[in-house]
Length: 419
Image 1 (spheres, helix red, strand yellow):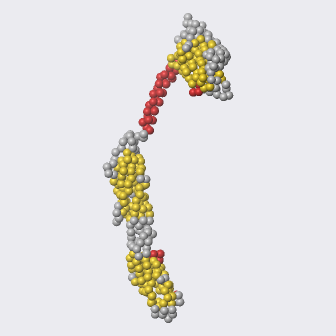
Image 2 (cartoon, helix red, strand yellow):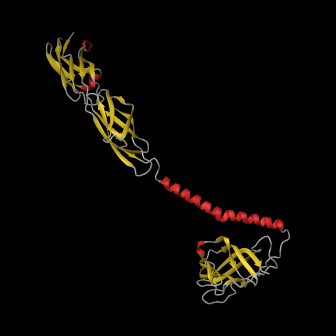
């Protein structure tokens, strides 16, 4: 054998991030000048530096090679014993290569951190978090967990309650916080707390978090309940004021029809004069007057008399009013009871439509608020002999291309003739 090699020490220890050295003695026992290449074999090759990697020796000469082990302080550096080999390869006689074996023991280190995600979570009965434990060390680390709330207002549940964090990994633990006391209504309450993660052989890690406890009943529920109660009251009022009387009226009409199969003489309505027949002034012409024709007799089944209806129409120029109101006059010995009125605005005009009994205003509506507006009265509007029902348009604002307002009132009710 032309080469003799000795490794000292054959076993050494080194901490990650530190340095340890071993010495290789090489002797040329051949008859030729030889060049030797030194190479580290095995998994330790990436952790060691050979100085010098190539040596030239005369016959009988000796040299020294230093092996410097520098494992990085990282999770990828394995902890524990690591066997390696050192091969010395002669360039002239490669068949005489030799291998020296050794062991390097790499120390372990613990480097962990913890993070709570999210830092603030809300809930009525419980809140959920995730605790991320990062192990940047080079060995598995058992970690246990504990929660703390200064006022003891929260309970803590970890799933799992402890872990073994592998090197170079992030392990997630589910955390559920539950308030000790609950409340039905009111403002949300904030409960700050601390989670302690205790790695084995290392100081504990503390992470802060908060639970925003909400009331069991959502804030919008009382308003919704109040709205439902109000709606129920409105529906009850409509039933008592409109629907129920209408049903009774329909039943009475049906009984009256069955008791009086021959219709009594009705009340005839004289046709209205054409719209716009009134005088000028600042506005357009008004509708003509019409008088309902009295009935000969009153139906015995209805104390209000016979059914009657009519329509009043009026026209006004832009910016003005109908100076002669469209009107209907109740005939002598007649009583007109109006139960329904429909206001008509087919063109979508603007302005004000006024309905009067004689000089008294019964209704005043903005035309721009409606196209058709129907009104029904539980207690009818009563017009005695000589009374006048009239409509007036003021402040006419027609919609282009129209140049005048054309609106009307349809009415329906009963007419009773006194003997």
